[in-house]
Image 1 (cartoon, rainbow, N blue to C red):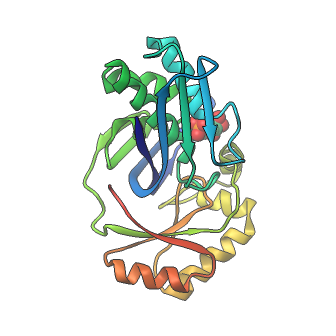
Image 2 (tube, rainbow, N blue to C red):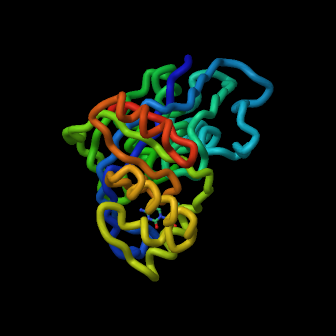
Length: 254
Ligand code: C5P
């Protein structure tokens, strides 16, 4: 069984002060994007959980494997052995939620194979990572609160396209949250100041993009991907062609 694992954008991201659980409460408008990895799961393999990928930078103990282990602990696998194959297209460390989406898609495929309802996956999803419940929910547009584990559907943004600017900088989410504790931040993405502080070249790119295109450019998650929303696919294509870094046009809320 093969399913796409879409990326996400945070249209906005409000972050509260560090809690006793070591996490920051958030309130964020998440949307899916048609840039996607692919996860397939088939019965069989030498071990109970087997994993293969086309991406050298994906570790053996990646979130897909951890999701399958958590599913096995909670419900048991639908077969004696399964082989998970991940085709990686979403950049890693880019704030696009690729690893979380892969984990969520792994849970959703295993649940479909085993006849388990989606709702029963939510507590496993939250334990795997803050972005995983959004992807398990299947909602294309949602306000996520708490640690990201409370997912409420919401209307999509009025503009259905986005241009994603991918500067190739790997940003560490925990490091950005630690810097946020020192420098705070402001809307629309309260992690932007911390990420720009850690990666001044990202701040420079943001300025170049906003000035060059004369449009608002936002950061998704803890970075490094920057984006601008667009109502017109042709305009999105022009922005991609003129971008000073790797860029792709995408449809949102798919
Ligand atoms: O949940 P995720 O794996 O994305 O979190 C990685 C780390 O980022 C956490 O261990 C925590 O240090 C930090 N984090 C946080 N508040 C959040 C999400 C993540 O402090 N809401």
